[in-house]
Length: 141
Image (cartoon, rainbow, N blue to C red; front, top):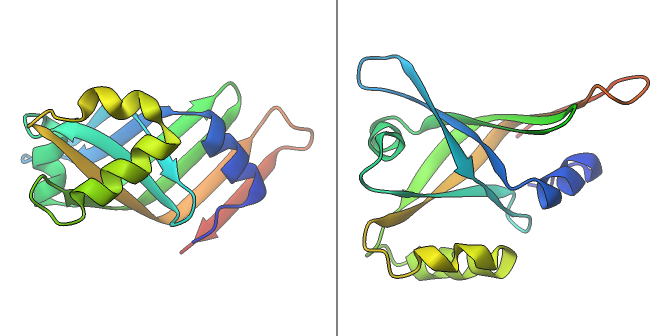
């Protein structure tokens, strides 16, 4: 999957966002997280601890959304998460790819509670309301 040029430029600069999940009681829960974009695969990566609500929620129900913003520009996404835990044969590969894009994630290497969540968008909306006229791009995958 390829991002639009505007979305790709935005995702290369903005590294934080909010991931949403559904809690065990059916209520939405959101968390502010670091986001690493893997452009070659069109995946958004989020690391977390196995001790967090988002981990438990997304393990039970992988449907999710991520929203990122800076000023008047936003990326809104919908999709699903695949959890890559230690012991998964892909863990080291994903960790290496994440570190190439964002070396600051090195501080999580070796943390036995660390897992990676691979967010695979099925819908993305890029919006820039500071542009005249506004720019809105939507893509379904």
